Length: 515
Ligand code: F6P
Image (cartoon, rainbow, N blue to C red; front, side, top):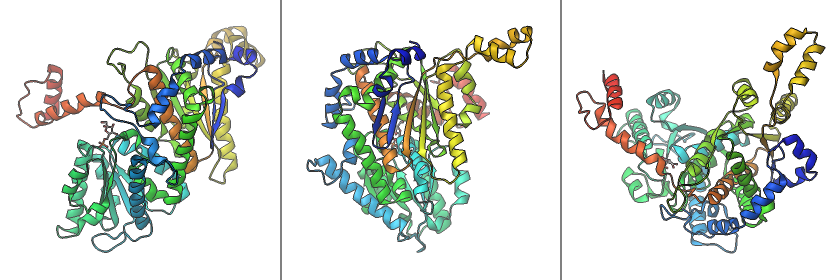
């Protein structure tokens, strides 16, 4: 479907494909789906209502693990009349977590030597890292003088080696965040930090003052010798990649404070209310899911390009949210899916991405749909920079859509005084095929509410797409095989260990590494 033709044939295209929820505006008008085709898809998706009700109602939407997915309960305002055991538990956990972070922010959390803690290291990976890290980076400007927040996610010792010399052991606290409490990387990094603190402060020091734990396995956490008041729960009914709204957001609350953390939850709740109640045709996550599934029938990837430096981690965050949720090949009953499921997600901030991989987006042989994310009001005084940034974002979407024909290129070259031979030779290189789709998301400004709107939008888009594909968006069995093999390979890396049982290719690589 030709985009220019769609605009000509559909006078209400912009209003039908433009949305606003809270501080988030979404524009799908540069997508190649016609409004008529969207209406057809909507008509065929009427049962989505039931799927949405099942999500909010706490039904087992994750049957392979026998779990509900009630991340929406984490952001229900406490005053709401219809509280449930989940919203009560979420509220109690949040109040304890916020109490702890308020102490930290007020300089009242003292380390083993009596000095106030002023630095918090979030130790976690995947959902126990990406959400908090994205949010701290995105919202740091709300309190630039708040506590210093660092992260240790990777088991690669270079990460710890670079971080440790920058930390003062007397004033550093560690937030150990792991839903399962068994993630090897996180456990190892915790041990490394404990050893470091012990070496610096001594074995007799009250080291427990430097630790707090966020986990769904409270019973295991007690073994760490951390007081119960510093252990905060995660819940079985919230998946790791959906958990930043819980105590997993501890480092976020430490960075920005209670009020802005609550604004974040309120923004997410605003999107929840929209997703739960808007008619499907005006339901932003539903329409986004339909648009993307249509796009996925032709294109295997999607580029996410935030035109805001502070959202630089968004592509990485979405890689987990979308690819771990919907990167599946079987339906809920275990039978194979009959269509392509999730697109590969990649991206980087604009305008940097323009100077790196946009060449291929404009002229490569594959069409890659692009998602642009911009912020209307900046939080800096450099107005000209901001205008140039947004002009670039709009220009990229327009260029992908319009393209530039050979006739236009030739006319331009002739105008520039090139002769016929030069025009013939250069012309094809300067053609842009165009008709390449994009979505534009705009936030009024980057604050807690807006980011809550945005991330909850993505969560619900993922769920709507998963429901339409009839897959389980809340399990992640695909990460298990590699974990099990890593455990088997680990002993084989020691000199002299038996290599039997490993495939010849892996054996050869082990030999190279062992030398
Ligand atoms: O291995 C994948 C995964 O289970 C993610 O789903 C999760 O967010 C991450 O590991 C970390 O898990 P945990 O919080 O249990 O340490």
